[in-house]
Image 1 (cartoon, helix red, strand yellow):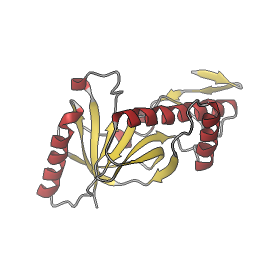
Image 2: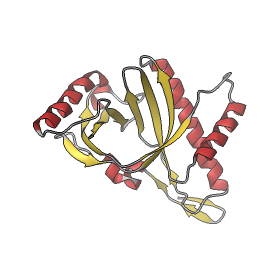
Image 3: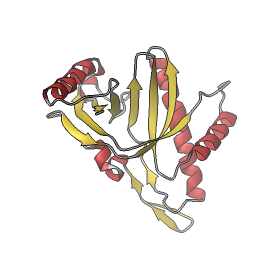
Image 4: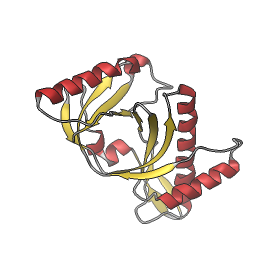
Length: 199
């Protein structure tokens, strides 16, 4: 618990704040419904690149910390402190998007201001473009993948096989929700929610 301006803020996990969004199991493919969520995102064209991914992750986390601590000095009515939320990645044929969920009190204007502050403090020549988007609740098929990322294609096949069996039409591009930090977790302990939107 933290005391700021005589107010007490409990630090929450996004998994506890938005449980419906992270309600998944490794036992079987399930139909679920995501929560309406808010995101800071960076889009890159071309093939997925590990170095670009890590650099983008640092930018998003830096912005998130910058905004969170600035709000503690003058918190909005719906403010809550939080641990860094699970990262989400969408990889398509032409581009890939790395996204970090944000609390509902974050707005596009605040993200833009936070980026300007971060750019002024950064030693980098230019930070990447950061977009702020709201994603509505969607019906999805999903399952939690517990193993190294190299086996994710097999999990996607499992989801599509279940969709075919149940006569469900799916979107083409899956979303990966990384429940733990891949930089600090052994490959066989990585947990990733793999979900595909139902059309």
